[in-house]
Image (cartoon, rainbow, N blue to C red; front, side):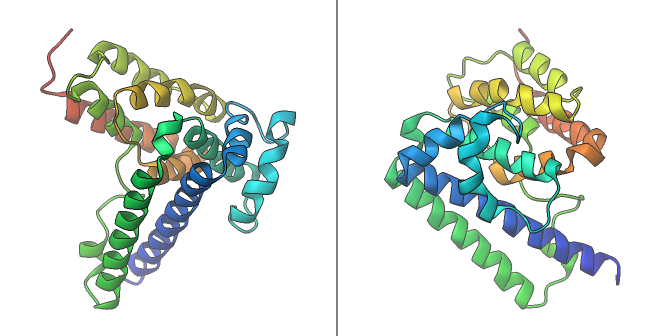
Length: 224
């Protein structure tokens, strides 16, 4: 118990930080077209690429204190992926509703913690219980009503992603994210950020979760 409580507290802090970062990026893209263009230009770029230079001003104040380059790259990649979504994604009405819903969920979680409920009831099992994995998003894209993504294509995509090195996952994610978004399926950006941060150290566990989530969701889908 003495070990689980600090670990649970750390996961909650990480969850809040990742959610706050992605919500800030979505809000920035919604209100500042210039910032959105600067972030979008960093897609598939590393931290030292000339195209990422405008991103430093926007993202550096939002990075975890003392983070290494791998963690920074994860934040830059997710920011670029969010900014690369179609313009209509950032409609004011939609964004306000999403922000309100996110704040409501966060408030409920904080209340549960303050009321002294057991850690295991507040936090789902697993090392990074932040939300739906990208594997789950791909699965939802397959079964979405009227979706154009075939199961075989999505399966090839998830298998490609889960075999990638750190550099490879950053390079291949944009195409996969674009496929998912064309079906109208939402992506849990906070969870994706968490997985990219952990990829250098736990890619095997993350890959297994992505694959399991994908096959669990698509198990009943018609075969091609």
